[in-house]
Length: 114
Length: 110
Image 1: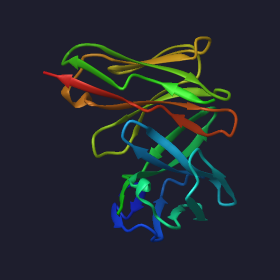
Image 2 (image 1 turned 90 degrees about the vertical axis):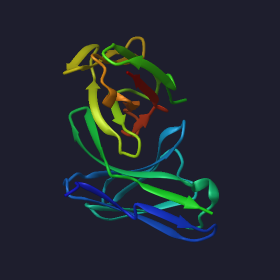
Image 3 (image 1 turned 180 degrees about the horizontal axis):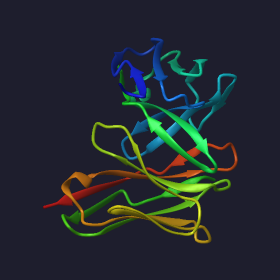
Image 4 (image 1 turned 90 degrees about the horizontal axis):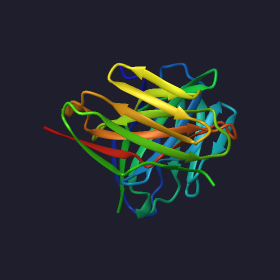
């Protein structure tokens, strides 16, 4: 079984709709992240959470919100989807070991906003 | 501001050696990581450098110079399966988050 899972894997929605992307992990990591990936722009951080009570904005949080329901679950919401939110979304988890932090990524959710 | 610069594309021949450079400007610095991503897949961790010097893991090596804010990933004995995108990433001390570069697309030719 995959350690980091994302649902749905693919989603098509219309402008103005609310949509939620879900991420679950069985790695026992306390840190979780949401990134979006666009061609030529790499991975850009949307939100991150270092534990259940800690939520932080990343580089591009406008238009997004998150919920850390439990240590193992971190959801990303688009309250009113717009076409330029069409992208590949990745959830990641990490466990800090000293200064090093290795991130483990889920398989991604491909979102198309029409 | 925060920025990581790496070439957008590199092409090399099977069996050759290729170096992918990364320069960074960030708010504090813990270390430099490298991730590999195949088409349609998720990024996977390759290496991490916190101190100056070369770290070797099989065919892959990673180098860091903190004074130059520079690092590189060296891939030896290239194989077709190495065709992928490679991202450098810096873990910042301010905010403790990781910033990724835009990625380098490596094409390995037969």
